[in-house]
Image (cartoon, rainbow, N blue to C red; front, side):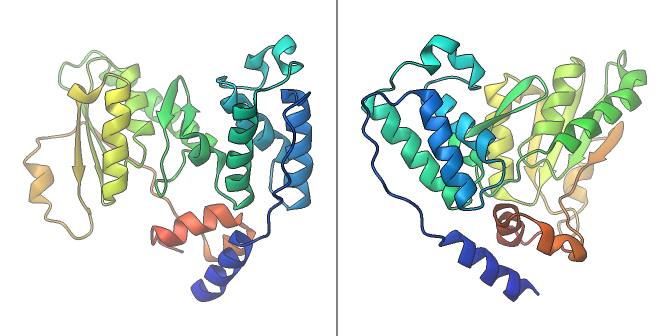
Length: 251
């Protein structure tokens, strides 16, 4: 099954992409979005309109397409901006997620750096944070609250909790060196590095004493990545490729 899926992902990754150069004269953000939306749709890229809007907005230095402003959306872009959009669009046509292309993504009230192969937080993860916050309300006034997160990924969950509870401390672990590095960078980005201990640790194979030495914890939170075997063929190729590259458990 894994071999078949890898072949499928590889085939999609080599889908031919258009290389037509568009003249910069008169090319506005609105027209760019329309053009790349049609190209993405032709090549089966999901959420074609959203993808094109995100890439064009990023090229113009805005977080969203609406952030460009109505006047700027109808004004010609520069040749450099046009080329930047095309380079990003070529990546999207190779099924690279937009979050990896622009290098960041919003999670709740935070903007986090995103780098492959670390998984991108899903909207469902925001719901998980909400549940954890509700469960931890009783700890709000405790002076020694420590949360252990197993599988920190980008650091989204741990950092969201630290922002919500100023007195809290977090121990965040992940077996992936890439995830540990990204969590550290995001903690620095948000000014929270001094309140989080980040450790590369495989909870299934590494000695538990490494964690015991860090002291007692008040609660444990974990949102490990997984997919059910019957759902594998339903996944978009870019998501499945990440799961396979990270050797994430298939159930």
